Length: 240
Image (cartoon, rainbow, N blue to C red; front, side, top):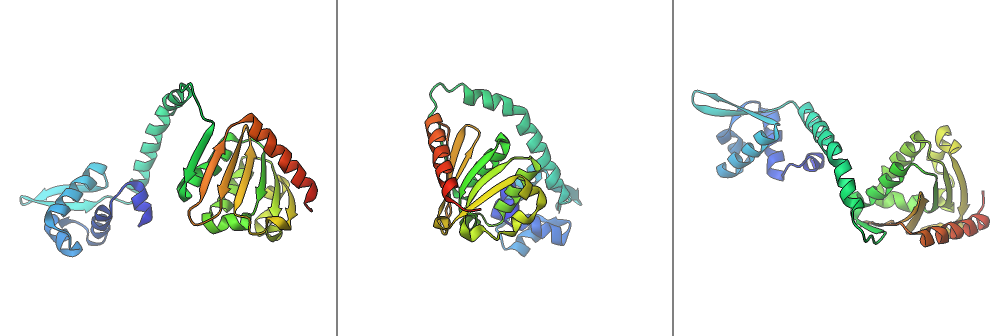
């Protein structure tokens, strides 16, 4: 399961954990037989799972038995991790701010990296100007743009967008709350365009739309002003 990998489990750990969920309390030997893993590998991974708090162990008649914790335990562990990370965020921010020389350019690659760009827009919470093709963005980011739009509406972030003509009948803008916060115009020259531009706060972000998307955030006054001018020119050329 990809979700368990994101929690930090290896393929072998996932195999053993899922096996324990199905079998209940089991010995390491039985788990090794069921999974086909080597005994040494099984023991090593069981120890890792015990340390992570999602497998427990008990001795019966001088034999160790292992049992998976309730899956909800994983949720609690993630919440604990989040709380610990949130405590050190102020210190991490100080370290980042202490750097004297800043390039003003941040580069992200891959779907997870590009999602950082969208989350940065939400974190800034400022008015957003956008031009590009939502249809093309959906190809690489699948369902995340819908979540992004919903979250943007929840935060009350206003949007002025120049979309591709192919986006005109997008049902997401039928949501009254989203539509109320959105000014939309359309231009057919953006159909199939594979790069989207986000102008917000004091920065500009570029995001490609392909199987291996790339995102770039530029924090620069000149670039920001230039992109705003470009947006205004295209805005006048586009249609309601």
